[in-house]
Length: 145
Image (cartoon, rainbow, N blue to C red):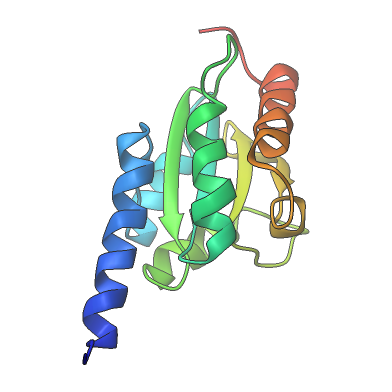
């Protein structure tokens, strides 16, 4: 059996993109889209997506399930580390004081970073623990929808 690695990875990336978009997140693929989205009024949750196991097994499920809460961000967006490199780099320029980390979450309010949930707070944790971290963040910074 001979499998084309690039074909396989394209399928993995496509599935990872679809999962988060189906959850209600808007995919940002250019630096211009990032600037427009992250400078909106209100709260914006950025999910830095990736193809690693902790993204698929923990971060994306947490990104989806955390939204079942009374307080939620006004805007949900995602960039894809390792795929949409310029968009991801632009998003990370808003995450001052934090090293690049994927998967990760950033919550911004009116274009200013409030907090981050970094990879070390995702990898090795149960999805529901990450859901709780996200909902604690929503409780602190977001309004009831």
